[in-house]
Length: 127
Image (cartoon, rainbow, N blue to C red; front, top):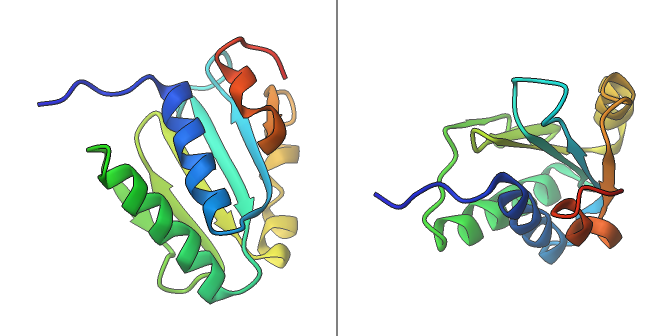
């Protein structure tokens, strides 16, 4: 069995895969010091149910190539809010209305936040 990858590296791979499919407003929330739910949330937006599914499928494909599989997968078929749980990293792919309604970034506003432009800074621990 392959040892699990570092959660920060896993979050960065997930972000890159989502961006491959043109995910919008990508953010990574660092929960390591504030929650036992996960080490990171990767949150992004898709324009439609088809786009949300495409983003999720790309994440799963790219991570499967790296021997990573989600432990849970929810909402992908409906495409309004999809969740891929990789244990230490949870991926949330929303349509815009759902993202605004659930507002996870406000709920976790005390978590350090990284944008797609600063994802490599995760390892250094700075936003």
